[in-house]
Image (cartoon, rainbow, N blue to C red):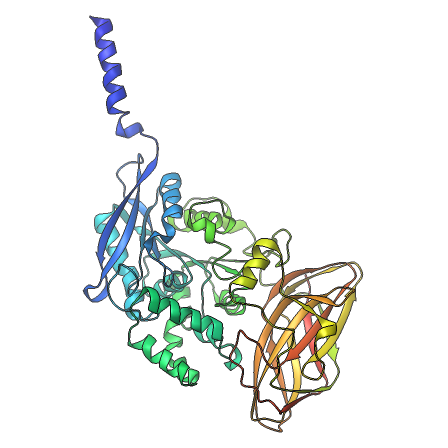
Length: 497
């Protein structure tokens, strides 16, 4: 009788499973409708921990990227729920895919949706309203920063492949990033419903009036809300790529420098969203692993030591281990003196910045840089200068700066500056670049221009090379064929680690 009773109990235990209190940690996913600003329905995948009690659980909210649905972060969310006990809401941003409303380009309604999702999660997903973090890639990263400026409940942010200054991103030095703008417009129309702001912005762009779009930038840029973010004490982590073709790293580096609360900056090889792509799917990834530790420290309050680590972590764009700094690097520098030259404008050369997404991905995944053969750069239509040779190699780290004396013959000319590592045969690997718009026919002027920042290991025996021409397929060029550009004595300062 006793043996029979034992067998029955064992059988019941096998059929019914272990009690909930000792169940192994896991997760469950549900598809939910959440009411956003103005009653707009936002579609979300809600990932909750199982086998870890009934909550309340620390909350992570993840707005989707531009043109990407809510499935974007489910892999990372499942990992965070199972391993760290977070409730995670991954939702489709308004105007895209299964969510309602129209695309307002990170306007007030889209930013307000983040707070509405937090409200819903507290009421419906066993979330702890005192332990809230927000994370996102690209459009989701920008929303995360903007929401942190207005919602004090957000304790920490992980903004990946983000912008902090929309104008600097899409209109650097008053030059339209044509490939980026075309990609965003096409993706928005293919996967969403453009609202009036986006429609008017496209009309201005098509009419050659991109400067008319600039007034919308400030309110949609976290750089204009730095005081609010600092006042809220939000812990901000930013992860971007050196070759990001949409949101280049200079704007986030400057934004990082103005933060006064807990902060972390990670820049690594790759293009837009490539550095953290696999982490969003739940696969091993340095950026997402760092983001998880960031939230553990500043949302859950776990003393994991991340706050004692060097906050600026930079991985060389052409390979190598992470280099860690207490602040943005600003050490020793080499200066290249640039002799005067005169070139004809309006013609392209074999030097260019590469193709959006493709070139940066090749650099990030395969260490294949955008290249050039300097002997084949036409000196009639481009200025070419040789820099110092490094017999023992060198590591560039920081922001190269041009002091450029220039006299254009046309009223408007677009210049493109390319910095290369050059080998003994004259083959160059693109380190960084920047467009420069020059106005004022016949007027000699000295321009202070910052190229995009970089960390780059120069090989032993190689040297630096600078090329400046007037046409680049990535950008909208305003150079006039038949005009000229005269360069006076100028200089390029290159920082070293």
